[in-house]
Image (cartoon, rainbow, N blue to C red; front, side):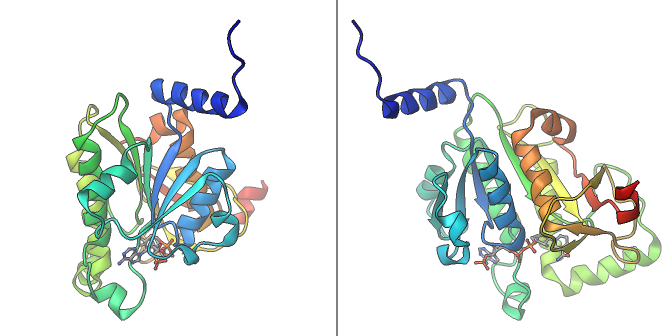
Length: 270
Ligand SMILES: NC(=O)c1ccc[n+]([C@@H]2O[C@H](COP(=O)([O-])OP(=O)(O)OC[C@H]3O[C@@H](n4cnc5c(N)ncnc54)[C@H](OP(=O)(O)O)[C@@H]3O)[C@@H](O)[C@H]2O)c1
């Protein structure tokens, strides 16, 4: 008679089976200590996903995340790890999410690394490309409604073009956001690569405690400079988690740069 499996063996076997079937539920999250990153980690954990959080300092994460059994923390930065370390962190992840952003201090905005987001995602994607899996990895990047999807015709008025030109000169993080989205859009334009991507574009970020109704559009429906909309970070995290966990949401938005706005209250109520 065969030996009865222990619970631990059953758990290991189940995990091996999931991995054999290409279903690995770990998301590598860069920028997990940020205002949106923390919310995304929480959303994913609540949905039974595993999260590997890359943070400069673990104590920037709240205790309820640190204590969660499905969260593992890697201290350091994507740009400072060795190639072998990046490969090890990426290896068993089916998804990568990036909520990195320059800190709003003089050093954060004008110091190094000037291309924090672009160089980090390029390094992560190249690592995935070097050891492709059966299924492409999902890459979800938090970006901004102030950036255009240059694969589409997104009309931008003359005054906004002038202001964006100035912003590019004066605020290097904006150029970093543009280049990061351009990298995914142009490097993985074909549907057959090791990486599939979605660039999420929120407008002016706000902090709310609960998820509310939000609207998604292929392109901005208002001017990010002269008539900005609001997007709560928790709604951004909710949508990013949907992209990672829900196949229908992913099929709908992969290879695109959806803009996300909170639905105005009066529209919510109707
Ligand atoms: N503010 C807005 O209204 C707005 C609107 C649309 C889009 N966005 C974009 O949304 C993104 C995220 O926004 P957020 O408010 O959630 O960001 P946030 O709270 O400022 O978090 C930024 C994250 O990036 C990390 N980080 C900063 N500098 C780093 C470095 N040199 N090396 C490694 N990690 C570094 C931070 O780590 P530490 O915790 O260690 O500092 C933190 O995890 C940004 O790209 C921003 O441009 C902002």
